[in-house]
Length: 47
Ligand SMILES: [Zn+2]
Image (cartoon, rainbow, N blue to C red; front, top):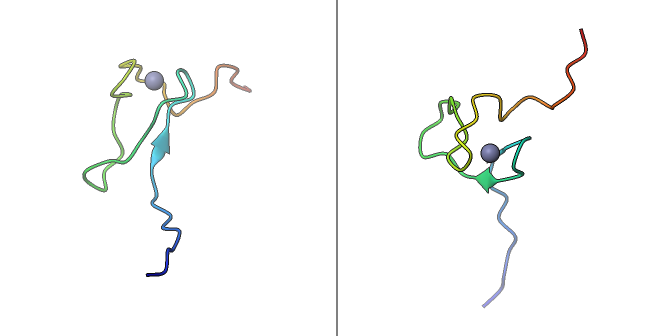
């Protein structure tokens, strides 16, 4: 049996570094772990 590496597209929280795979294709509003709505934005935001 051969083993292959399967890459699954998922999300990573910028706040708590939590990684997860969404059930649906829609982008989650908050991080499932820290519940932060800014999970996809870095702490420092360039204006
Ligand atoms: Zn988080």
